[in-house]
Image (tube, rainbow, N blue to C red; front, side):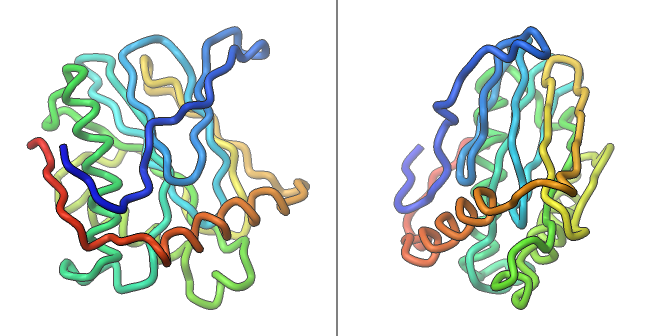
Length: 202
């Protein structure tokens, strides 16, 4: 796979979660993770969206965490839509490498909250939410659960081996870290070259 200028990387943050008694990977903005092992994937979402994808027949699953850059996500020729499509395809490709069948994939989708004042004016959370629902429908990937938009950040715990998801809305949390992380990510997207060549396995 040849990629120029995109932000997604395999999540490098691994730890042992004592509360759940399981190995875990923390997914930050622009990251993804796919696994066939019994583990937990964790992320915290503001305006960004995470898609939890799983092949229920192969017990292979993964999660991404992305935000669309500026542009029209519903215009298939826009850089925004190309970026969102790439964010999805890179996760799907990793899952198929682990033995998943694209025709058996099911999705659970979270995030898209209006938690950032500057981004709220541009409806970033709503745009992210609309994009991912349109993408899943267009690609015939079954949506089995979603919790999108609203005004709260979310913490998502995903167990790919079973498909179980726990979602906690952070109504009392101090959101400075979440907002700062997403603002920095959004700034990187503005300067990233998202017009380069991308070769995807299908």
